[in-house]
Length: 194
Image 1 (cartoon, rainbow, N blue to C red):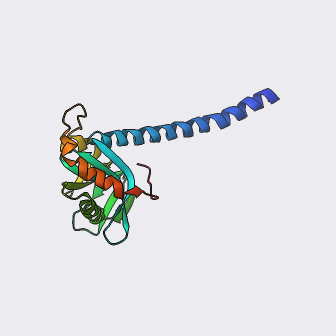
Image 2 (image 1 turned 135 degrees about the horizontal axis):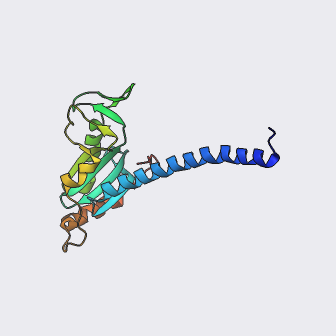
Image 3 (image 1 turned 120 degrees about the vertical axis):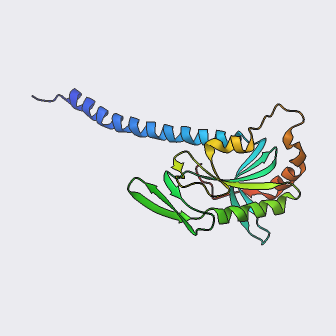
């Protein structure tokens, strides 16, 4: 059986199109997952800043993934997308993640969260400031979560969804501090895909 030039061209088109379509689909799924994560973070915020540098009080700056204006004050969010089972504690230097046969460690994120919260408190004046390291649903804590660690899907339960139709807004008490904070932050060059 001989292959005609037309058949060969069709085979080549299929050989290129199928992997290209699969790669395009995978990219589309990643973009959709990022969009959902951003929507879940934004659901608790009356206003939000993303990927900003906050002055640390020592002539330096700290990168913050998200600063949220909530009805309870300001919230610093460090968003993590770590797949697998995560084992960590507040006072451990490193946390472990196991994903199938892969095992890896990463530095305890709480120390840097506490630094970010302190920097925001310094810039925000009287407003209450809280912070969370928030993990996407791809991660699980089978032995329990350390303090100040939340799962993305429970963030709205923990902080309440922002009802922007309420007048006056529950966040109006912190507008002055929020404006002061906005005036001192700057865009971060350390932007990460969330």
